[in-house]
Length: 180
Image (tube, rainbow, N blue to C red; front, side):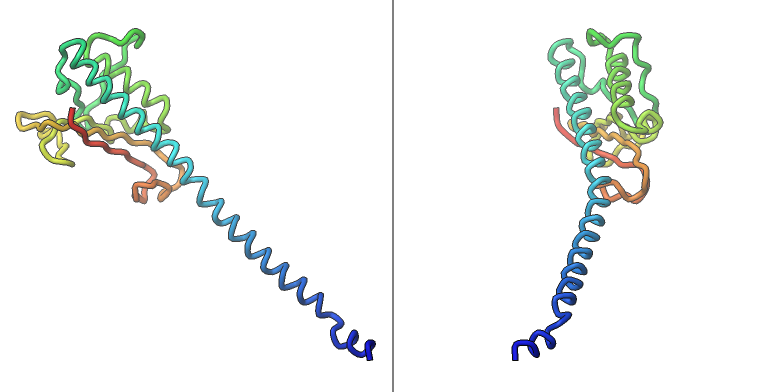
C-alpha cells in the first residue's frame, strides 16, 4: 500500500520547485525594474539638493550684503536671457561689488550642477517681482517689483523624463520664492 502512494505522488516535488522558481524569478525581475527607476531619481534628488543649497547660499549672500555692506538686496538680480557677470580672479574673500558676488556664485553653480554653465543665461534668473512667475525681462526688478525674490536654477539630465519636477525634457529646474 505504501508503494502505490509513492507512485501517485512521484514528480509532485518537481512541480513545487518549478512554481517556486517562477515566483522567485518574477520577484527578481520586479526588483531589477525598481532598481532601474531608483537610480535616475536618486541622481535628480542629489542634484535638486545641490540646487537648494545654491539658492540658500545666494539668499544668505543677499542678506549678508544688506546687513554688512549696506548694499540693497534688490541689487541682486538677473533677468531671464541675461548673462551673469564674470567672476573675478579670486572669490576669497567675498568681493565687495554685487556683480562680482553674482559672478562668483554663478561660477560655483557651474561647477556643481551638471550642464548648468550652458543654461545660466537662458534658465537661471534672480527676479524681484510682484507675482510668482512674473519674471519677464521687463517685469524683473522693474518699478513695480515686489518684496519677494524668485530664484530659478537649472541642470541637465541624460534622459528626458528623469526630473522630479515633472518636465519631460532633459532640463530640470528648481525655483524658490522668498521674502527678504
